[in-house]
Structure formats: structure tokens, C-alpha cells
Amino acid sequence: MSGLLGASEIREIAERIGVKPTKKLGQNFVVDANTCRRIVKAAEVNETDVALEIGPGLGSLTLAMLEVAKSVVAIEIDNRLADELPETAMRHGFSADKLTVVTQDAMEVSSLSIDPTVLVANLPYNVSVPVLLRFLEKFPTLRAGVVMVQSEVADRLIAKPNSKTYGSPSVKANWWADMSSAGTVSRSIFWPVPNVDSSLVRFIRHQPAGDEALRKATFRIIDAAFAQRRKMLRAALSDLCGGSALASAVITAAGIDPTIRGEALELGDFIKIATTLNK
Ligand code: SAM
Image 1 (cartoon, rainbow, N blue to C red):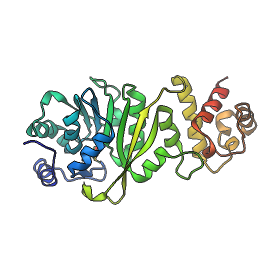
Image 2 (image 1 turned 135 degrees about the vertical axis):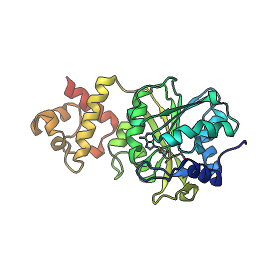
Image 3 (image 1 turned 90 degrees about the vertical axis):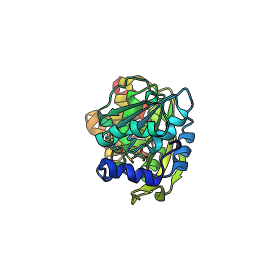
Image 4 (image 1 turned 180 degrees about the vertical axis):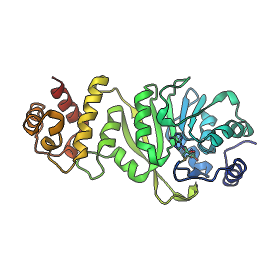
């Protein structure tokens, strides 16, 4: 059998292996081959890539990745799905050597036997942001990727300062990469049909602005600023700096007005505050 998975085969496999999609694991499977090819194309996967997939499920996207990548590494928490994936790939004519399946919670994966170069994933929605940030941090060889997430989360990942959706995910993701929209996806291409809209986010890694110590310090400032996003920056950073007066002094020394809110700051401003605080 060649080609990608279709809707009836997906249901047939799920039934055979006893998988009833659960909300808890964000199991909404893509049943449309064209969408899978579109996602892989948007990620610009090529024949030299080791493509990483988080949550391959029944393999819809995995097969589209196997069509173009040198190899695919897929991390799946549900062992019934993980066990079936190599069978599905082989039935569709792909060599077993091209696919490595890791049966694990992606939030616990810190290393892989092969260095992935591109990430393509329809992420489990309940953990999409922490999973994405984790993989950007732990796998510096990932140069780019496309992830499918809930539209509301996509808006947050690509948001710019002074918008309602701008927050900690926007700034933290921007530490690692340039994030942009790669379009929306119709609800009708999923089984089961979810009750939220989905969108694609593309990322391209850039040089980080500093080392791990600076990143951690910057992320602490970001967390504090957005934990109390309605407050002025000097109040939001008060605990971190040892009082409001000290916070004011640090923020001013970084060249920033301490009476503005965190949501007005760009990543570069958070870095300036972290650098000043560290001195
Ligand atoms: N990629 C498939 C597709 O597009 O049809 C499935 C995507 S589905 C939205 C999310 C998948 O992630 C499910 O297969 C689910 O079992 C898996 N999953 C959920 N939580 C996970 C975790 N923490 N680590 C790894 N996989 C996870």
C-alpha cells in the first residue's frame, strides 16, 4: 500500500488497536492527506532532514514526513499508538530504518539518539507551549519547524508587544526563534472534530541573545512581569528585586520607564533588565 493515511484507514487502525481518542491526551487525528502534505511543505522539510514529530498518533503526519525527510523520530506517550506506528509505515511502503519511535512523555525527553533538524507536529493541545519551549531549549539542532496548535495559542506565540495576546509564551519563544503564522486549518479535517480552531505556527531559529545564565534570568523577569500583567513593571518586579524602590532603580538603570506594564516590553527590554539586575 502506498500513499498517505485516509479517514477510513485511520478509524480502522484505531478500532483494531483499541484506541478511543481521549481529550486528556489531546487526541484529535488528522484525516486529510492534503493537509499533512501542506504542513510538511510549510516546514520546508528536505531529504537531508532528521524530522522530529511529537505526538504522531496514528501516523497521518508521520507518513507525509517520511515521504520527504531522510529520517523521522517520533515521540508518542500512548504505547498502543507508538507500537503500531512502524507497522503502519511499513504497510505504506516506508523502510523501517527511516523511522525511530520513542515511547515517552515528550515533557520528559531531554536527549535523542539522533539530532533532529526540523520539528513538524500537531501538538497535544494541553501541553503545546511547554513542549515547544522545551524542545527549542533542549535540541539546538532544530533549525526550524511548523507546529499545529489551538488558534488562541498560535495568536499568543506570534503576538507583538501591546496586544492582548502578548505574554510570556510570545517573549520566551522569541528568545529562540522568529515565529510567524503559517495559516489556519479547518476543524473538519480532524477525527474527532475538536471544539476549538487550529492554526499553524512556523518558527526559524536565530542566534540567542546570550548564554543560559542570561536566558534564565530573563525568563524570571518575563514570568514576574506577566504574572501581574495589569501592574506597573516596578510593582510586578518588586519581589524579584527586593522591593518596589529597588525594582524602580533597576528598571530605570536599564533605560526603561518603571511605570509602564510588562506587556509593552520587547524581548530586548527584558534582557536589558535581567542584565542590569545581574550586575
Ligand atoms: N500527529 C497526529 C495527527 O496529526 O493525526 C496526532 C496528533 S494529536 C493532536 C496529539 C498526539 O500527541 C496524540 O497521539 C497523543 O497521544 C500524543 N500525546 C499527548 N500528550 C503527549 C505527550 N506528553 N508526549 C508525547 N505525546 C503526547
